[in-house]
Every structure is written in C-alpha cells, then in structure tokens.
Image (cartoon, rainbow, N blue to C red; front, side, top):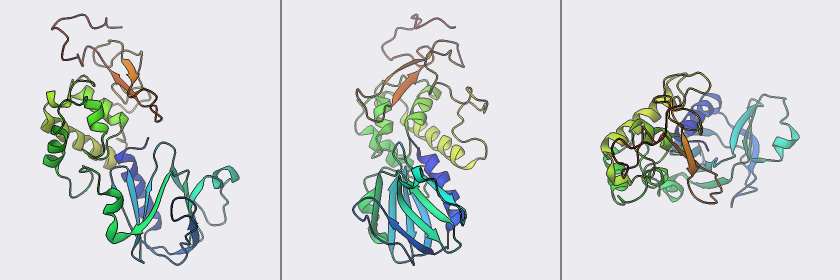
Length: 277
C-alpha cells in the first residue's frame, strides 16, 4: 500500500507535469460522480493529507482520490495510446491542452467535492508530518487516548497520525526497540513521533532515500525488518519473525520484528529469544 511519503512524491510529480494545464476532455469513471465531464477545467494545484491526494480545479471543485492497495497514476505522451488492459482499469481520464493524458488507474476511491468542503473527505484524519500544519503534540495526544492498543494497530490508525503504512510502522518499531504488539502507552510517544516525522520527511524529499531505513540502498539491505521474515536481523543476526496483523485482513498486512532487538515487555532479561544466525 502506498504510504504518506509515496503519495507526497506522487503529488510532486503531478505538480511538475500538469499544474496550470487545462483539461481538453476527460471524465470520472468511478464513484458517486462517475460520468462527470472534466473538460474545460484548469488544474490549479495538488495537496496531500496522509495517503489521500487532492487535485484542485479552477471551478472550485476538488478531486479526492485514495490509491489503497492497487491504484496508480500515469501520464502518456501526446499521440501515445494507453494499453487496452490499462484503459479498462481507468477511473479518471484527463486529456490536457498539450495532448498528454493523465490516467488514474484502478483507483478505488474517487470523489468530486467542493474545495471548500474538503474536510468532508479528509476531516477524520490525524495530523500529517508532511503537512505545514503538522502538530506533533496532537498526534501524541491522540495516540495516548488508548494506551492499551498494540503499537502497530495504533500507528496504522489514520485518525491518530496520518501517513504511516505497514512498512513504516514496522521499521519504526525496530528503530525504537519496541515489540510491535506492546501497548502503545508503554513507549516514549514524543520520541517515537519525532522519529516518525523525521523518517517520513527524509523519505519524501531526499533523493535516493525513498523508504530507506538502514541507510544502505542496496537491494535486500534497505529495511531492518520489513519483508525480511526468516532472514537474519541486520543488527544482531537473530532470525526475523513475522505474523499476520489482522486475521483475514483483506490488505494482507504483515508484522515483522526481531525478537532480540525488540523483546516483548514480558520477556525476562537475558532470556533466550532466538539464536543468531
């Protein structure tokens, strides 16, 4: 699933490629506004909040989209056709005044709302570290309201802090030495949120550092635990464990952790949690 940094980078690409252009023809093909023509609208700007993308037009409307697990955006050059299989998945199409076409492919959330009422679709979200109105204290307050929640579940709750997905939640737990299923109230929330904000900003804005948590960009070495089930921990060599986040979770999220670097709060000091490999 795209995370907040993914959508932020998408926003930057779309801004550079399309801002100020007028839609020659196009339409929405999904959602309550399916069939709405977009011809004549000028793309005024883009914004993001967590994993949500907002495309603002000059008529006072905003296109709200969320990629979920499968969605994506692509732009084809003037005169170049999108493959038939991809066209069948198009949920948004905009042919620009220079002939290029912007396609929103397989996007499950497509809403057209008045720009003045954007809060109707994003008002439930918690603070986002990538926005100018980021409020770390508010994020800490929201997470503190249910201190008994497992850390991974609390950080994935977009109403508490927006933009963290499965990869970042797992990597942050490792970086802070926290067992992923320990209660969120058992950790230093201010330090955790400060680290989360710093990591997201680096990933979103620093060239070559997109979702690199170890500092090593080589394939297979860029993450501490995410996607490394059964492999040795890059820090101590202990076998990385994995389990389902939620039984029958349609998004098939997984939780990875090193039992030595991230001992469960109930594990006695010095206990054998797995031999290094």
